[in-house]
Image 1 (cartoon, one colour):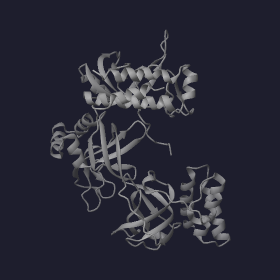
Image 2 (tube, chains in turn red, blue):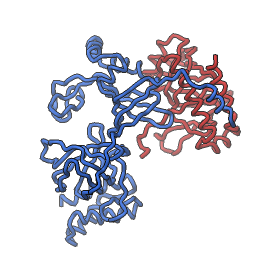
Image 3 (cartoon, rainbow over the protein chains, first blue to last red):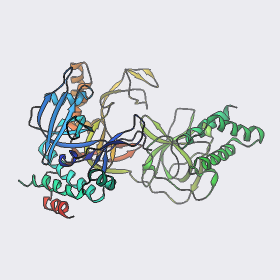
Image 4 (spheres, helix red, strand yellow):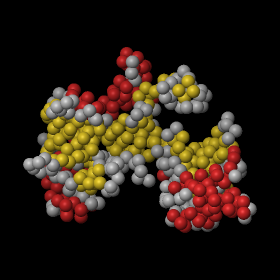
Length: 182
Length: 311
């Protein structure tokens, strides 16, 4: 039944996503989906995030390759888009920061020679949205994150891998919600 | 014998997703029963299916085992080639212009409604509109992206006195619109009566090259963070929610010599935004009757904060 089933887009704050450094596959098959392990105990093959696109740079040498910073109240998502993400690339090229954007995409990790693993997003789509959508996303992501903290299906794996109590991410949720208080 | 070949193929199709089964092996078992032991083909099918069920560990279809049949929900049928038993009421029967079809129409249970087809070659008793039946061993089929069920030669039909309640099958979903899929936007449909197939490069898969009729639609995905839903917006919904009328869509496509400008604009309107949609689920699609903005800028922050803090 799972063949061809679309993966859910998980809601995750930047403050948790940046710590999701473990990427894995569940089988040796080349086409098997790849996941990152969220520290609250869930595997994510796709994420949905909404934040402020604050900066963009075309860092491509041969062709267009954009790095965009999408900021939520808890941190920054790095979004990389090039020729294989034509729709997202078109939007990022046109956007004039700062602007609220919604990003649907695949989590990806890489390990620079001289430092910690960096987790980024390879977007399937990027779209300009309004402040109401951003606020709704913060509320929804707060709820989903608390759900995972309380009953993340891969909680044990996450604790073992990251050596951190998922409960610590309550602070991230509170930080995000407090940003809405103004 | 052609008959055993066809039956073997059907059995193979049914079991191949559950385990390693060999078409030749199935056919030779059938031939053995039919040719050597003079067993009728339907009995032979039952026997081979039951053997295979034990071998690959699949639930038996209702057919041979007798007793203890479970009935599935129509709303749960979302993929082709699934075998199931249904308890249904015949909602309506349709006229068919095909000799291959003995009967087709709409059957329903509490969870929803689905199209059924009874093939002439299966020689089954006909269903009557308004009556309720137990249908054992029916198989799902996908036609024009919609799931239906086929009654086949192994299907057992039992009329029941109890009247099955038919639900509207409406479901309501709220989530983010995360994808607009290909086949969305300005399309052309076959104008032949009762066809309405979507044309590919001006051709209908049934009627060849035809002068298509324009239509506007969205095939999309709504994702609530736990589940994904395939949704279908017809012309009216698409116009309403995107503000693009079909006339404008035609004009834009003509100006750009390309219909993708319409799809791009639809994506710009929908992707990343929150919507609440309601409608019947037909096969894998939720056919959207009602759609509204579901972003909620007003909510109880204190409540959420309390939930977040309570360890």
